[in-house]
Image 1 (cartoon, rainbow, N blue to C red):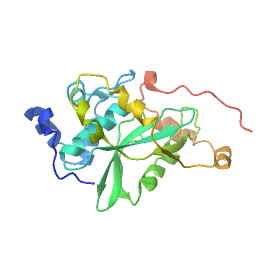
Image 2 (tube, helix red, strand yellow):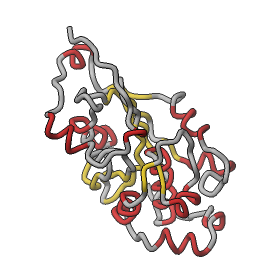
Image 3 (spheres, helix red, strand yellow):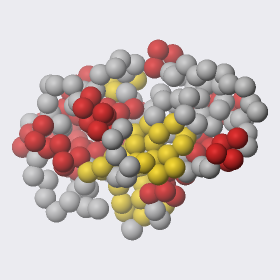
Image 4 (cartoon, helix red, strand yellow):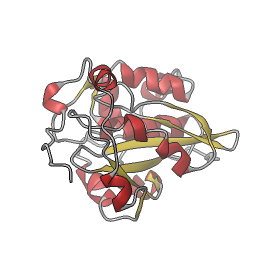
Length: 218
């Protein structure tokens, strides 16, 4: 999953390339994203703009991570995690020692970095399951997409454009997603521990949180 040549380096300035390469590693990229403010607005800015605004939502964070990973020698690949009665989540994935890891921005504390120790993308995705819940404690992760190599959007200058990249998010709704639960599994799910829920949302930006509807359990 490494890229032999970063053909789009020249779309960043030399200073921007230097800034990203100083992050050095996937965890360095994650530390940068952890230090950015959460963006609650429905807009998708390019990785170049994130460098200067130091503000990003989940999707923008995944795009930035993918672009930064690309400059560090990986392919720019994202995976969409689809939820029920909750926000979806997008992660940038990378491969190291033949295992998968992830970098992600989140308005919660537990849906971010994953070490490259997972043998498949499904195994990586399932590491998020028990910590993927809405504000009322419902475990909400339902499916994940096929990997999307963002090189397919190079003609739109996705890494550096001033235009809104919402169309990439729209594309994610059109691609294959793999369900991870049966209907019976969903009916039998327990709620997350309240202590974990409280910890997860500590410091979250309220405007950026999904407002779930409480449902009757059968």
